[in-house]
Length: 247
Ligand SMILES: C[S@@+](CC[C@H](N)C(=O)[O-])C[C@H]1O[C@@H](n2cnc3c(N)ncnc32)[C@H](O)[C@@H]1O
Image 1 (tube, protein in one colour):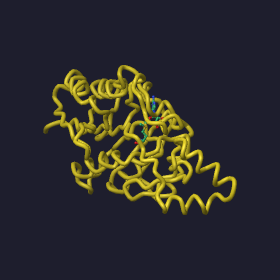
Image 2 (cartoon, rainbow, N blue to C red):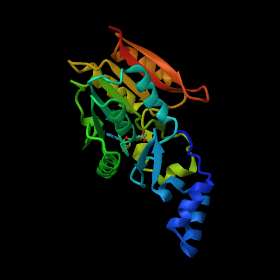
Image 3 (cartoon, rainbow, N blue to C red):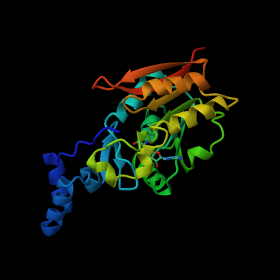
Image 4 (cartoon, rainbow, N blue to C red):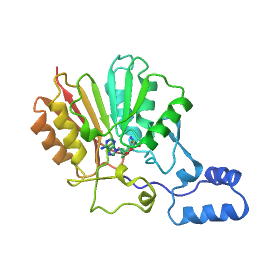
């Protein structure tokens, strides 16, 4: 999980001043100065050109997650008519962006948190997309991924021992941390893909720094017929994995 840029731009400050005045403004500015995310104060972020509402019930979409969407956009033809699933959808930022890029496809977004799904539904309305469905569901209880052509996930991947930025203490903790050195959900997803009779052609993950080698090993264990490519972020770190079936 990359740190958020918590500096307040002049535009953000002008917007905050429209929403808060006098003593309330001082309280809010002090809160931001002590690490409270400016995005929660403003209540929305821009993600892939879409206006995404956020509050403390959802992870604030990170800039680098836009690259995951871009990678899918560059890999899959935009007129494709496919079934895609976004696991751990949070605010729905990835699913909604994909729904716009792939208008002929059907996107499902699932999250364990009811409150996150409420925000995702609101964002679906806000962005006027109809080819996306959101459901509350626990990935751990899913038995297989039969029938989905593409799986996408930016799951919780931070190891419980890892130090995180000050803003993460205000974000939902189950959106950030995962067991097994942060690898739990990657293994869970790939194992259940291996148990599917009708397997997806593509799996796209955002991953933490230093996780590419263990995830490649997990992928080779469960999906030996698939190819794994690693992609770097702008800082040159391995941050995305594309696992796909060579036809
Ligand atoms: C890293 S956040 C990603 C949110 C959003 N997709 C994004 O990229 O901004 C991970 C999400 O997974 C959800 N989550 C955690 N455990 C889950 C589980 N067992 N089943 C389904 N979703 C889960 C969290 O609620 C959170 O919204």
